[in-house]
Length: 444
Ligand SMILES: [Zn+2]
Image (cartoon, rainbow, N blue to C red; front, top):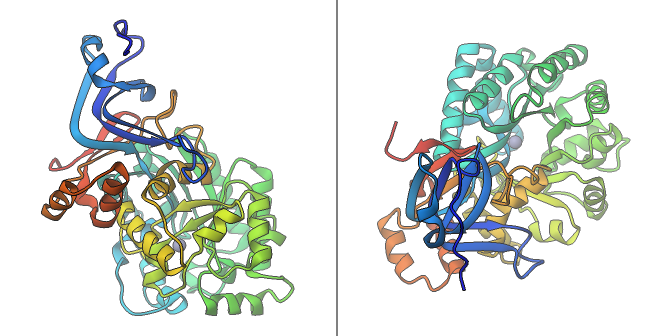
């Protein structure tokens, strides 16, 4: 028996969204009722936050006068996708041909990042990047800027204008890169402190201490990264580890006293909650145990790992060890801004590693799982009461092929699987941030 609700009042609703809804409450591998699906649902918001998710037929006639209704009937609404590792300055060099990590950095990345000494250029790419995120239904990212402070200001300003929850930081790099892209440890520390004061916890923004990777950082610089974290314990730390076999060999030469690549960071106090390490491919058992114990997160970057030929991330072993894992595009080595396309490649990486990424697990990973990896699940990642209302509106019939395929879809899981294999930005009808529509397909 359905309970007929009393009328909503203006105190409890200013925006309502009608659609099908899917969101996760926990990891579907560990719980039978990890997700909630409503075929005809109504998401009721107040002040940009979730008040209730209910059945639309019971409630649609009880909305208070003056509340805005977005009717997305026929579409599927999910929490906004969360990209746990990407580089906004590399947007313009995505899909650059033919090299593996270390040569790719030299030939494409460093010349591109040099342009970000110019604030106007940084602004232009930061604007494009945020728009491209929203066009793909991504509402939160952990982003590398460049070594230039201006590049950090540009991305935070672009995110702030859209009220997006964003993590970013200045790249710290004092060796093994062109002189124009190197800072020195003391200067890098001072600039980071200024940026932390200017941006950290301003609205929905978070600062991340961002050493590029161990080969580009002297021991003194890594020590100062550790000092920044010790002085500001609620900061993030983002870097790369164990992406490519030549890189791993190089790190062993540069830091002979360390047991492993991961151990380099550990010795400088850079492993802990809110530390996010991209790739994590060539790790051993002791590294994985240490990742789990420390509370640090792995960012799984399937399109990047395949594109650069770096190797296959083991999602299975990460979960077996109880490590936090987020999904990531890693643009511009990653080949797509679309988290649907990223899930497509993630599925194939898991297939090659001999296990299956189920569609429910995949969409958990792109939403709540990534929020948990970033310790942001108390604010974003699902539609529980009080959460910040970031969400994506998906059309599962966006292409002719998807229309045909969906006719034969027998279950929710089947539809979700076809969505992640066939879908891309064409499926994103709209993206909302804190309840506000920030992207609508077909509108400029
Ligand atoms: Zn990266």
